[in-house]
Figure 1 (spheres, one colour):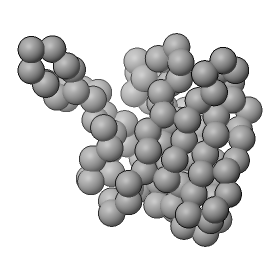
Figure 2 (figure 1 turned 90 degrees about the vertical axis):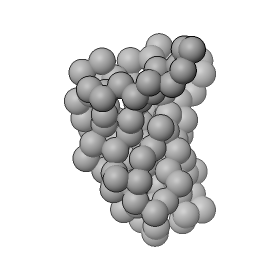
Figure 3 (figure 1 turned 60 degrees about the vertical axis):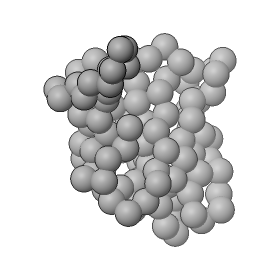
Length: 103
């Protein structure tokens, strides 16, 4: 889940929820915005937008940032989602009213 201290954090769900302290994804600025999180269909990658309009990609297993792009010009990048069949395609949207496709 997206936390307000500029991190993505992971919880394990079972009988109860447990924070996975070693699984955190950092490097983006989301404080004050409801930026969505996307997970690739194979579970290998995580993406999220940030308040500066950037789109970030991390390796889920290693929690390492792989790439960041200037995705949206005016305001935050608030949404990102992987295509369910074409796993090399990601869509993002922002407050600029634009939906972009990334390959």
